[in-house]
Image 1 (cartoon, one colour):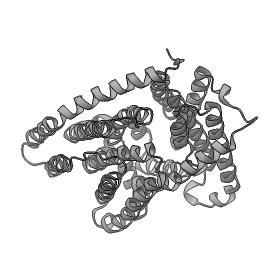
Image 2 (cartoon, helix red, strand yellow):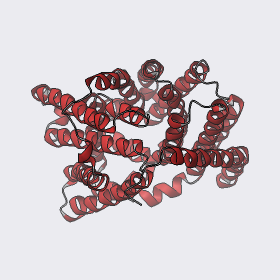
Image 3 (cartoon, rainbow, N blue to C red):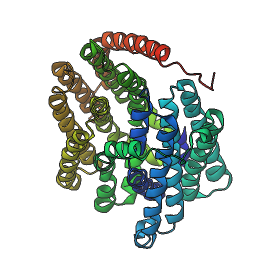
Image 4 (spheres, rainbow, N blue to C red):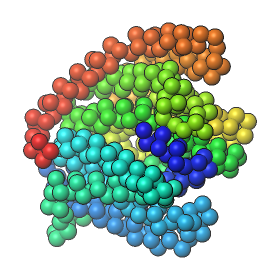
Length: 451
């Protein structure tokens, strides 16, 4: 629905430019926050560690990072792309950092219902502010940015009031030893997050430079559909991460990790197959007519998102084992590969070349992490099953892109095979996570203010 709104009130050039501003802001967020939200969830879940010192440490890291960003204001202001949006970008970065901190701390407190309610309300806030700024006030790209800022700000206020987060702000007697430990964990993740950004978003800049902002606007609209895969797998992965930390040291954990991995893989491939099959219908429904041609970029981006979900899951192993440096090194390889592949494919194949470069980069990181994590936790990677699923999705992609005669029938048959291959593992994995989450809540019981 939001995509339809954006594409109806922003032309392809405006959408392409504001997408680059958002992408630039997302690059700054891990730098400003010092990656502290990762440490907040990791150390906040551990028994015997003061929640006040964890949350206060998060605030201190963000304040320090934003102070440095302010010092670079004259330099960043020289970037022509950001001129006219600089103030909004700074506010966007700060509010986004604070919202992520509050969300991760609420998760660390095991306030899962509150976290879920906030996610729903945040979506409604964003919709409401978009209607106000884009439709009512006709503020264009400025309204697009303001809607995100205001929605995130309301989320911070909501979580702070309901969870009484001010009670966890304590700088008197602050535990600097814990703060340093948190930073040692989180700082290696800053370049890791930046390399993740390179793999996931740098293609926007290549497309804008080589093909123009209008083409990037189409690509940005196409990117909205694959995020559904990411959202679905992220919901499952976030629930799993809580169990991974709280129950990740017991007997049988390798079997547990393997079963959850199978479930995440099944969710990603099932969602990917369904979205590829419904690509043209979804694009007709969700975007304005001028953007419809972007459906051709969606299928390969979807497959990229499938592998991004698998890569994110394997990162949970590094989180449990506190091996943030390995997270950095593996994603760095993917980022470097992505830049080289963008130079190779985008000039010749345009946005689909960028999408394919992203797929190959995530595939490379996936294979490296499968091999690398075996020395930490031996997960059954089921590579033949991954290979079969990937072939089925690419088969659907080729049939759709070439619009072969009776293509809905052939794509439907391949989608049926994807369902047959994955449905069993999905159901088993869901049961496993629900059982672990129930045990984890009983052993870490704390009243959820959303109840």
